[in-house]
Image (cartoon, rainbow over the protein chains, first blue to last red):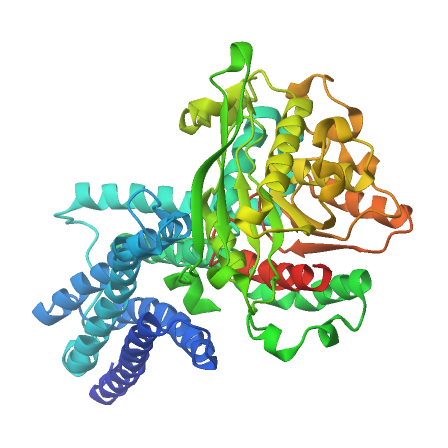
Length: 302
Length: 289
């Protein structure tokens, strides 16, 4: 790779990380505004797009930097460790935001009698959210700052596969990430074919599928990022073994599972036309005209 | 709304009266005590769209597990109360029969609700609750002439059975004074487990076990929630319930399908499934109240 090409890649990486830094910072700003005034506003639709872009962007930067940065330099090594931090904190942040009802999160907010007792749960949710964006912003900042000096040169090969000083740790990580990705794959199958695996068809195992299916589609917006994080983690820790087919397989499987789990986020609002038609057939085509504007202001917006 | 999905939607404010006793068992079941939670509109509902209409909410759990005000139901209760509805989220007697893997989750059940109950028994207990409500309606400011019933899974089956039995008017032995005092304006079953109560072993009326048999041309309006990939309640059951309305020449039934949704997919209040259905539910309530 010539010096010009190195500079070109450095500039591209700098531009990507700059964009993602902006997305993270904008999402943090919107997050603070949402915490202060959560009542519906069209601004929150913009915020929704930004935060999804920030979550995806952080992962994209981890993926790109993993290929572009020379991990044999001290700075490259630091960025590599930081990228692991992005993955770990994103997955943990999502877990505590929505999934672990026992320690807090959105489930507890739904299940508390007194609104005055929600401080702890809200703290957990927002801590998870800001943690994801803060580590993403920090990583993007450092990649942008050191892009030129850490970009891979022509003689900077991949990690050698002969000497692996952290083989035990690597094995543990591979197992944990593999199990996580497998679990997400199971949830993706349930989201695609849950009713076909149901109670009456398969007895007790069907009941297990049915119970697991409680969360498959409902929490797909959380699961998809966890699946993607686990796949990226696997890609990073297995890359030193230089098995291109294995890397491609992990990437494809991770991407497919993530896409399936993310589908309900898009498919649900997309089914509004069908639901509207069913509602109108049952309760009259003019049902919207029978709801005064003053009353509609109490309801959820379209 | 994506931010709400990840960061939550703050619960609305309302007046809550929790753990009100409405039923005490007799004889060997004197330990059975059933309670309800009342979620009442702020400022007595003045100026709010709900007009103090009554909503009775029945939890799910395969007739063997669960409790009043479970998970996302509680926030829905608050949400509807804040719109001017008087919401009552109730306990009912749970069966001590073994229902496979569901029964293994029964450790979380309140001990005061467990017994050798059939669907008929549960219907009787709900009849007692309805009569209690009629007797105390002034206390809660609840409008009994505009009553809705809603619940999920096993609670969805009981929703269908109670609402259609009262609307039918032929079950005074179960509902007493409520049989005439309550006017059912609508029912909102979510993934109703109609005809799935195997534990009952035929002890109950067939039309209570499968409320599809109660549907007729005068049945109250109905709004059904059904996940397309529900692995516990076959989506065909909801379709059959809607078809029963159509076969009875009663068009007032809408079935809302939720794509890729499993069982109980409304339990996450700020989730896309629950908010999507809530959009239709609150409009259904207003149009039929």
